[in-house]
Length: 411
Ligand code: NIG
Ligand code: FE
Image 1 (cartoon, rainbow, N blue to C red):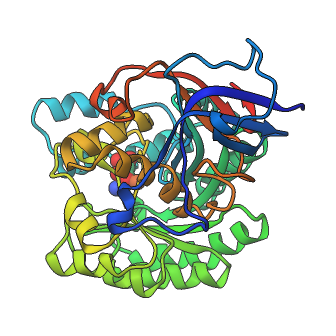
Image 2 (tube, rainbow, N blue to C red):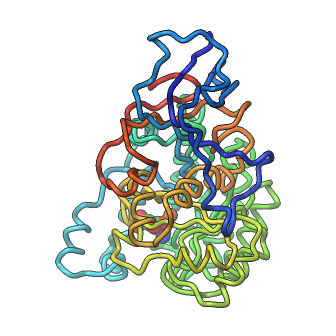
Image 3 (tube, helix red, strand yellow):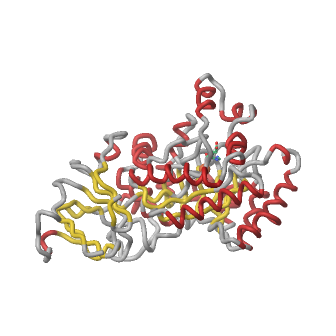
């Protein structure tokens, strides 16, 4: 592939010399080079700078539309995009007044998706997930983490993880895979928690390791699901097979997941709708990502995560979509960014950094993704003409993306 040169653009660059996780006040730093150029060679960003220093020939071809902004693709570090069918019937129940717990008690929720998933073939699951990846990449997502957790059986979990592996091999998106066998207890293990944990640890994990099916291990640490102690047992077993923890904690209740997650040196602690002051302080000192999923809070009509308090405490916030059929049936990161500004009072630059470079940190791919930097992958969003970067979250819900480039190719 030859060089691609773009001129007369506004470039959102990350000017830090090194790749540091962005925390506290520095989250709002996202310098713009107005009237810039950018060169892409073989899918990699090879050069950029101000047009004042531009040395290449200018042709009509490489002039990008005026007022176009170029920013790094979204790095969506928490999703469940491999699932079978949808759950809009539960959505209707919810509109009629049932809450999340009541829906789950009626056989809905995660178990409903698990039933559907176990009845769906690997090929069909791949096909459905592929369509979702196509949809989110057109909305600017260039890297994504995908969890299992709707199998809840040896066969089901391996089937999901094999689908994710195939997606990794075939998709233009950068994909990381997470084993979430501990999403909930299947009905037959309702009163036999230890037996299910043994199944995860002694039977499923060794097979995952043998087929190299996952990068991370996740546990839904929540009242009525997995305790902090159970999470620890599962994560330590996962670590034994080389899987680092990336955890669901404090969505509905505070039951010790944060403290335990920090102790386990999790790559990220995710959800965080329900936090005590003490836990906010702990996350402020945590050297990994605190990942907020505001569309889940939006869809479930819960309180939003305390983003400002976390930023003030010094936490490294990442933003992700949580794309799943139950609590966030959308993977639109543009909406995640807008919602973070509108409802959590994040500044546009903070939200963009949290959805790009910190999302990359939350998937440990920050060396190659998440910012516009020489040597990184050319995963770029080209906007339609917009007056400023704040216009993106301000004009929420509007389609402001002109083109998306993945690995140097427009999709
Ligand atoms: O991250 N909280 C646990 N898991 C998902 C929801 C799963 C579902 O309802 O299907 C989440 O929000
Ligand atoms: Fe989730």
